[in-house]
Image (tube, rainbow, N blue to C red; front, side):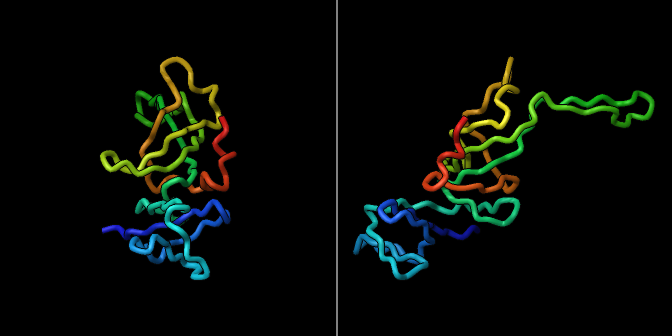
Length: 151
């Protein structure tokens, strides 16, 4: 069973913090830096996805992640030894996107951009969304690093 955790972004003071307690009856959030007791209406709650990236960082909603993306794998085998002679992919690039939790689908990224958009030709298109796993790496979040999403 995964641990249910949240963090919060408060745009009025531009701070991201882990949530210790949510007090709905008082409409406030107590953060790990207990100096702050934030107004729930002025904060964005972001849930931990249950996934840690490949270097051990927790992945939360609204994080920006990078993933290695390969499509159209081709392999040429030696007919006598059946050993691999050559292998290539039509698309081999890095994709970036914003993490979301979709209850019906799981953890995905959307708002995807590619490091090499020129590779997406013919039958290949930049995906609208992709499921992620621990092979991703967190490179920022939409509050502090929105510029990472440029195409």
